[in-house]
Structures are given as C-alpha cells and as structure tokens.
Image (cartoon, rainbow, N blue to C red; front, side):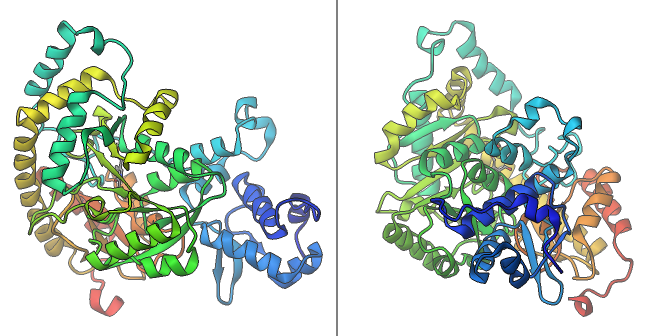
Length: 499
Ligand SMILES: Cc1ncc(COP(=O)(O)O)c(C=O)c1O
C-alpha cells in the first residue's frame, strides 16, 4: 500500500531541524489524528513503505509508530497492520468527531492551542447526577448532614471577618490546613505539617496544578494502565507524553515502568484502591516505586481519592508516609466523602515545593472559596466529618453486600466480580465475546450509566468489563439498574466456558 496523499500532505520533515526526525513524524501524525484528517480505523502503510516514501530510515518510522501506539493514537495488531485507534484516548473520540470542514468550525475553535484542543478533547460527557445507577464514585447525597453543613456555612457568612473576605493566602485557610493535616496523620499515616497542605478546588485542579508545575512539554509521565481519565487529561494538558504502565493484583508494575521509561519525570498512581480495577498496591511495589523516584529524580503523584472507604481490615497507610526522599505529592478530595459539587480538595506537597505551589495558586486561580474552607474546617474539627465517615462507611458496606449478592443472583452467568472490599464502585469482568462499550452505549439509552472497562485503557484491554458505582444507590434503584443490565446481556452465556 503506497503512502496515502493525506499523509504526504501532513508530514513535512525538517532534516536540519532541532527535533529528531522520529519526533517530527510523531508530532505530524498525532496532529493529523487529533484534527480528524486521519480518521479512526484508517490503516497506515507499513513502516517499510512509509520510510521509503518519506525518504527516512525505517527505524525513524518505527520509533514514531511505537510512541503513537504507547500513547493510544495507533493500534498495532498482528496480521492487520497499524491503524488509527478507534478505542483511542477519550480525546480522540471528540476531536475526531469534530467537523473536518473548516467552514463549519468557528474561528475561536480554529485558533485553539494544541494544548487547548487536547484539554477540550479529553473530557467525555459528564453524567447526569440524577441518573445514579451505576455512576462510579458518586456518594450518597441523602446521607449527608446538610442541616449541620448549612449552619456552619452560615456561621462564616453572616458576619465574616475581614480575612474571610479578601484573597485566600498561604495555600488555604489555616484552620482547614491544620484540620486536614491532623486528619491525614491519624487516618492515613501521612507525614506532614499544616504548611504542606495546599487547598484547591477539587483533586482535578490539584492534578492540573501538579502537572503544570512539575512537567515541561514533552516530559514523560507514567500513568496506570488502565487508569483515571482525569489524570491523563491533566497530564496531557500540560504537554506530557504518557507511558501507560500495566497494573496487576499488586498495583502498578514498577519494573515494567522502569523498563519502558526509566527516565520519566512523574508517575501517577492510585495505590490504595486502584482506579478502576480496585486492587491495592503491595508494600514491595510501593518501596520500589519510591526507590525509582529517588534514583530518577522523578515525582510520584499519589491520588488517594476514596481510601476512607475500606470495609474489611484496616486501610493501608498512604504511600506518602513511606517517602523519606520528598518525592511524593499526595492528593486527597472531599468529593467522595462529602459531595462533588463542594469542589474542595487538597495536595500535600514536599517541603521544598510549598512556597512555589502557594505562589502558583494565585495565578492559576485554583484556590477554594474561603467560607467553604472555614465551614469544612469546623465540620472536621467538631467531629461531624468523622461521624459522617462512620455512617457512610457502614451504609456503603451494606450496599456493597447487597450489590454483590444481586449481581451474583441476576448476572452471575456472565459477570465476574473484581475486588469487593473497598471503594464506592466495583470492577466487573465480562466474557471476551461481549463488547463492553456496546453494553455501555445500550445501557445509557436505557437510562443506566455504566463505564466500559476498556475505555480506561490506552492500549488493548485484556478483558472487557463494566465499572459499576453502587454507593449512592438505595436497594430499589440497584435492583432496577441490574434488571436493565440483565436484559442487555446474553441470557445463558456460560461464564466459565467463555473466559
Ligand atoms: C481516581 C480519581 N481521582 C480524582 C477524582 C476527582 O476528584 P475531584 O472531584 O476532587 O476533582 C476522581 C473523581 O471521580 C477519581 O475517581
């Protein structure tokens, strides 16, 4: 197959340029994919043909292809060559779906930066919170003590002191930073002083700040495979090049990361309850990750988004507590333990980063409203947070039990459950013969939100499945949601035979 005209039009290589040829080719192909000129499913010529058509060494084309495969833009399958991925990073789906006819695109969109396009493209549709079955990570709103919360908010809004009405300083309200650092020390084994806590408007804002502060465009970052799309988006938005590192029952496979990208600048991990598979990172892996970070002078971002919810045994302490080399940036959020619209979360940064992060917060505008910070400080220090955690832990543990029984009874013939002892959502596995994205599409039409496990992979997904949130669901909604899923599944798939 000769190289298609679109590729020739796309690729112009500057042999005297500062960037190596493989990098120029990578950039050109990536741009063609993002802009929709190379559509999902397009089959690319072989590396040999392309190298000869472009007049470059085959190694150059291979290096560019390898990187595009690693970042999820291309798929290489034995026997069917290399194609533009159709189960691509989320951004591809949106960007590729945009009209390619420039007359249909407004000037503002046309003048977006590459970073802007990536950022806009990484976001998939935001689920409607009133459709609770089976949104991942949604807490129970009914369980939240809104009476107490509004009283505390009122306390800080009725006659606010001057310092509550100006700009937030020092990375957040002092009372809240103190309350968070006390809580983290006791509950999560995090080793920090209040100074190291930086309060932000959501973990997502924290990830964005971390990526912008610590990565230059083109820097490599390890991300978990499968992993959290929000983290990918923040890293890509800062211009990072992503290296998906596989996750197994012991969490991130650090040795694999060291093999493929030993000089990465940053690793993003969810060690307590891996998102989305729900595995816990073993102590050995934790130590190895910290050792690598120390050696490689890299940062480790620990996203501890829902570790409060563990229903068997004691929660494992945070990775941050093991870090003696000041390499870990810890991220925590109140979105799961209180509610997402609060937009309140925090980073715990190594001492050396405190000053620069505080300063940067001023110009990124990611600091949270002071009245909300003050009310949250009281909510924690007066004991309401601890009681709410106790109540919701018991509630979610019950719901998990009902949910697993219901799934076994109604869908046991097709669905296998992942780890079911923590968190607010459950990873479940389907036989290879079932297309999880198709199930997710059909479920959405029937009013039920499920996320296909394959959508969390940048590379090929080893086994299809569904991520199912249950914490927000009273039994009735759970039952009707499961009934919808049952209708979408083959009636008598013999699970064992099909795996
Ligand atoms: C793994 C993970 N990290 C971070 C977040 C985002 O938290 P926030 O709502 O504070 O931005 C979520 C939310 O779903 C999550 O699942």
